[in-house]
Image (tube, rainbow, N blue to C red; front, top):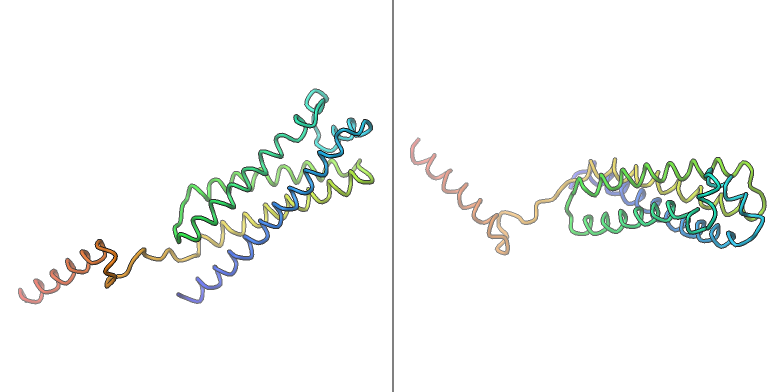
Amino acid sequence: MSKASTIAGWAFGLAFWLSLSGSILVLCGLAALQNMCDDVPLIPMRRRLLQLPPFLTSTCALAYSFQWWGWALQTAFLALTTAYYVARFKSSGVMIMGGCATVLAMQFANDQLLGMDTASGKAFSRATVTFVGWLLACTGNFGMMVASAHLEAPSPCTKGDAQCPAAAAKATQAETATEVAASTA
């Protein structure tokens, strides 16, 4: 394993940790904001926090549903990234999913930041937690995508591995080709 691959591995791990921490903060922040939804004075506050028209903020289920779907996509991205990393397999599909999750996280962070201008008290604190969570999630996602491009993709088995018939067959073919080339020369 090269030094560059080791550095990329550490960068990937740090980015994954940032993304996971952000996802946990988003979970806490969204749950706390949704918990405040039943308070009567918060109904106009929801419109300002999420920058939504009144018909979408009539219930909390509508007001935060898109952000909850974004959190679900973020969680799925982290789960798939973990599975593929443990299996030592690279997939461009997982990175495309990560790109979508990152764009949504940036949009949600922007929504929370704009809404914090008029929020105060508990709403401000909870919106801040959600904002920081989305910011960490999108930063971590971007870092994982950049670092994963520099990770080495190890071969599933080596030339002498008895449990890998494909590698053994390729090794035999290469040895045969070398012997044929040597005998004709």
